[in-house]
Image (cartoon, rainbow, N blue to C red; front, side, top):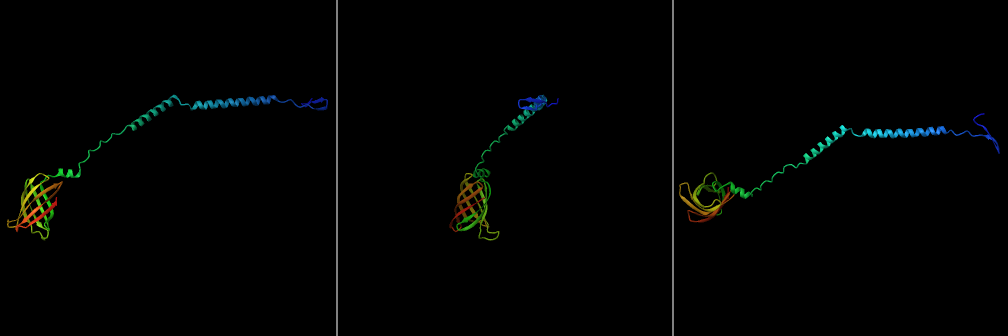
Length: 204
């Protein structure tokens, strides 16, 4: 008899259906389970393979330690520069630079006339020369000499002037004031005629 057997029932004869093949289904299930196991084992192997070895772990710790040391070294604050002491005011510096000694070039006026003066101070002794600016050329200089009394920054002065023949032709009296390197003198000058003029000169 063939695989398809005739089945006799109340309605008549018809072919009997073949039996279901349960062995194929079981084989597919087994294969699927095996595939799942294989995939799980593969995943476990890969994860385990990525874990660092003891040597790698040691090297990592060394690198981290060095990094911390470098960071600590770089974080060490640099020495702080000490602030400079404030410099004294400009005027105070100038006053300390020069005492009331040496040569000074002054300019100003005697009355309404412009004058220039070369003045030398040596201790209490005063010497030098001056001339009126309206006098052209190198001539016209009058010799001066005198003395001062007072301190290094201010006091009284007395000056006499002389012509080329050595004759006294005027007398000056007044005050001096030294501010830094700048010397100024002011007061009254009486000429050989007895006429009084105010003088005011300043410079270095």
